[in-house]
Each structure stands twice: as C-alpha cells, then as structure tokens.
Length: 156
Length: 293
Ligand SMILES: Cc1cc2nc3c(=O)[nH]c(=O)nc-3n(C[C@H](O)[C@H](O)[C@H](O)COP(=O)(O)OP(=O)(O)OC[C@H]3O[C@@H](n4cnc5c(N)ncnc54)[C@H](O)[C@@H]3O)c2cc1C
Ligand code: FES
Image (cartoon, rainbow over all chains, first blue to last red; front, side, top):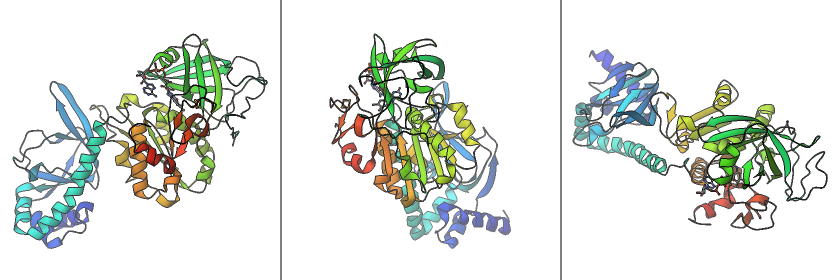
C-alpha cells in the first residue's frame, strides 16, 4: 500500500466513532496493513472456526452475525451497522471466529490486520489500555443484550 | 379527537345500549378475520343491536366473552374515529383466546367495556414521542398511533421501535410497511433471531434505544409488550434521560370484574382495570423490581 493510500485509510479510521479519541500516531501504527473492502448482499465476511486474522470497522451497510445450527441454515442473532466494530476473536487465543458474518445490505468496511493490531497494542501499552477500555463497553453491552435475548422477552 | 375520556365506572356505551348492567355483555358479530401470525388473528366486529357503538380511547380494553367458554381482557386495536367498528387482535394462548382466534365471520361474542384509562396522549402534546412495542404490544398502541398520525403537527419527533421474537411474529406487517414510507416519523423494526430471508435488524428492542432520535427530557414514551420487555425498555429509556413519570407501560393482570370491584387485578396500590392498564414507570419501577407482585 502506498503512503497516501495508507494515510487515507488512517484518516477514515480516525473518523470512525470507535477511534475518534484515540491517539492518531498510534492508530497509524495499527492500521499499516488495513484496507477498505466492499461486500454485496449475501457475501460472507468471516466464517465460524476460521482464523480471525482481522477485525472490521463498519463504514456503511449492515452485517448479520449468524450462528451455525448443524444441518440447518444459520440463524441471525445480531446485526451490526455503520459506526460499529465487528470482532474481538482476534484478541482472544486461539484467534478463531466464533460466528459467521454475512453482509445483509451492501456493506463497506475497513479491515484491520489482527497481527499488526496486536503488535501495536503490545508495543504501546498506554494505547493498548485505552483501546481495550473502549472495546470493553462494547463487549459488555453485547453480553447484556445476549442475556436479554436469552430471557426471550417476547415469548412471555 | 374522538376520544370520550371514559372512566370505567361512568362510561357511556353510546346509543342503543340503554342503562345496561355493567356486567352485561353486549352482542357483537364478527365481520372479518385476518390471520396476522400463526397464533394471532385480528377480528373485526360490528354491534348486533342497531345504533349501538363503542367509543373508546387508545389503550383501553374490553372484556370479550365467548359464549360457553369464558371471558378475557383484550385491548382495542382499531381506530377511535370508527366507533361503529370494533377491532381486537388476539393471540391464542389458552382456553378463551383459542376460542376467540377460531371464530369466523358471523359468530357472536359478548362485549363489556371499554375499560381502563388508556394512554395519556394529551400529556405528550408538544413533546417528542417514543412508542416501543414488543410482539403483541403493537395492537394496543395502534389506536394512539392513528391519533398521532392525524394530529402529527401537535407532536415533536415520533420514533417507533417495534420488536418481535422472529419476523413471522410481527403483526400488521403490511400496514407497518406503509408507515415505513412516512417521512414524518422514524420506525425501527428488530427481531430477536431470524433466518437468511430477513435483511432487517436483529437484536433486542433495548439495543435500538440509544440510537433513537428524541430529546430525552422532552419525551413521552408509551411502551407495550410482555412485562419483562417493558421493564428492560423502561430502564433503557430512563437511562437515556426520559423522565420516569413520562414513561408509560401497559400492564396485564388477570381480570374478573374489570370494574374495580373484585381486586383480582391488583398490582401494588393500583387496580389495573380501573387505574391502568397504562401506568407510569415512576409508580411501577419499584414493583417491577420485585419478582412476584
Ligand atoms: C388490559 C389487558 C389487555 C390485554 N390485551 C390483549 C390483547 O389485545 N390481545 C391478547 O391476545 N391478549 C390480551 N391480553 C391478555 C389476555 O387477556 C390473556 O391472554 C387471556 O385472558 C388468557 O386467557 P385464556 O383463557 O386464553 O388462557 P388461560 O387458559 O387462562 O391460560 C392458558 C395459558 O396461557 C397463559 N397465559 C395467560 N395469559 C397470558 C398472556 N397474557 N400471555 C401469554 N400467556 C398467557 C397462562 O399462564 C396459561 O399457561 C390482555 C390482558 C389485559 C389484562
Ligand atoms: S378485575 Fe376486578 S378489580 Fe380489576
């Protein structure tokens, strides 16, 4: 990737709500191998069980997170939209996706290389801490939502 | 507004009903039946007695009697400007509701009502309005939505959040699609789980609240659905800053008399049939935190 292309992506990353208040110099280190990608409706972004070699910032569209159900078609349990971040399997050993993700609308993402991101987080502990403190509420919210979902609030 | 503000013990039944005993059901004939979802139907009813009509306020309910089977509280889901036609949407969960859902045009049921205080729509005038419906919570809100649509200029932003278990559990699907075309409101539809044929949102209704567009301190919210859904929704609305006295929930309790006599429907200090079913979260919050009330 040329320096200008890399700059352009870093700029887009910095404008993504997840990164707005994160130190730009450190973002540059993290996104050295990032790239912008588009997906048509139905195209898979990730497959359950495969190595989680990147994570995604959603720029446009909608992504359905699906859980495989044996021989039945996948069941969508959550949708992720513009402004949200997809995936933390890349941070947790053994770094494998725990769900399928499929574009349910024409979707644009920035895919950030996981190895580069992990390296940047480890090399800059203050940045790493800040990043994780931003990711933690996202994980906590999703956990809370999953709990509510498990209560089957409409089935009562 | 065609809403007679009817108090349960003093309500008038319109022409033709005379001074009927409050327990006496009036005969209504099923004129149409629409299958909404596999277990839910909408029944359209007309009074059997000529000149009879049933004026009501959005959020009120009737006691619907299936002769020989029994009686259930069912909210009115029609239009307040058409008191000559009564509309009820029923989910078959037990003895009476299964019998109701099986009725076909020509069948006669007994109606007592309307009962309850309904949604306090006047308190929402000049404010943003958030309507959150879960599953079969949409029918009791529909008359009030019609009122809002008719007097749209009297309200600020209108945000509707409608959630159901799966896409096949969404009621009034075609009508809701027409609401999606309106530019004067925003509607978010979400389901808890879906197959690949659904390309809408998936996630519980509460997830939609942080992104909903309203000015929290100047917002009135009407929430209807299963109790646990209303509890989480009210918490999320309060967390966004909506005053707890401006969040209204429609409570369900077993009804017998529906007239404030028997105490069957008591919930804390309130009789749901007489004081509710629409009650403010400010009063309900401590009760909802208790496991059995
Ligand atoms: C103010 C008010 C408004 C209502 N509006 C509507 C409405 O518009 N449409 C509608 O379909 N219902 C509505 N209900 C609920 C309805 O009154 C009950 O579902 C009905 O009385 C159940 O009677 P049943 O004889 O069919 O079931 P029963 O034979 O008494 O019960 C059978 C089974 O159903 C379960 N059950 C009972 N009530 C409910 C319930 N509410 N939800 C899920 N399971 C239940 C019971 O626990 C039992 O397991 C309303 C209730 C109230 C208090
Ligand atoms: S049902 Fe009798 S008091 Fe409410």
